[in-house]
Amino acid sequence: RNRSNSSGSIMSMDDDNSSIGSTSITTNKRNDKAYLRESVQSKFEKGLHCTRRNMYALARSKFRAALKASILLHEDIHHISISPLHEMIGVVERKLGQFEKSHLHLLEAL
Image (cartoon, rainbow, N blue to C red):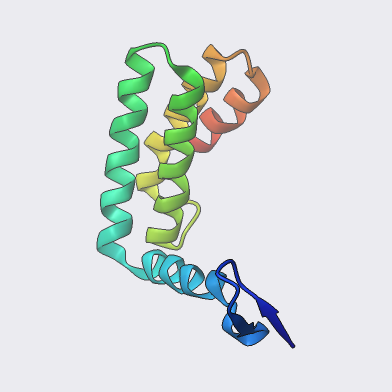
């Protein structure tokens, strides 16, 4: 099948694979240990920065991103280096009034 693109040119439906390229880039980043290590450190530091400024929702987002990257890096959800991330998420969830979530993350940190 064919269709017109924004410039009016005819292009094949097979040519419209814009999402495929971005998927492979994401996959490459998930497999790049140096990228993941840097991402964990950067997100954790940004989370701390936000916590110090009482920006708890943003801090939670940064710590959760660091947690995700750390799990991908270590390929182990119980790796010891993940404990500080769970601890900080627990602290931030408590500040946000999410006591059950806070409790679960703090238990995971132990």
